[in-house]
Each structure stands twice: as structure tokens, then as C-alpha cells.
Image 1: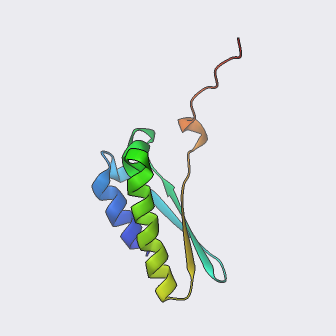
Image 2: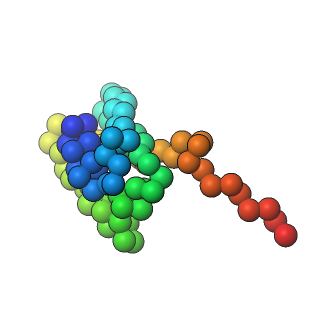
Length: 88
């Protein structure tokens, strides 16, 4: 499933070389941590979250066939965080 996530996400983004998918296996759950260029986050999420929702639905279906649960998380690295606005 990790390869599937990488393939789909790399096809969507402008910087495919910066896509990193980490698979964390649990007993009945697998978590996919997705790291990518901050400018590509919106492309993966899609309008009103439709793209990420569709990708999560496909992962859920594939995992259910294996009797497991899949979770897809977009991880924002510290260097990608926007500075907080100061309260005025």
C-alpha cells in the first residue's frame, strides 16, 4: 500500500522528489505519514478536501481486505510551519 500512496501522490504534486511516505505498522492498523513540499500540500488535500478524502477511502478499502485499518496523515515539518502572527 505504501507504493500505491507514493505513486498517486507523486503524480499529483509539482515536486515528486520531495515526497516521503513512511509506513508505521501496528497490530491491526497501519499509519502512512506523508511528508512533502509545503507548496504541494494544497494539491494533495484538494478542493474542500476531496482529493485526500478519496485517497483515504481507497486506502481504507484496501486495508479492510487485509483485515486492517489504514490512516493517512500529512506531516508538516518544523521548517515548513508558517510563523504565528503576533496578537495585536
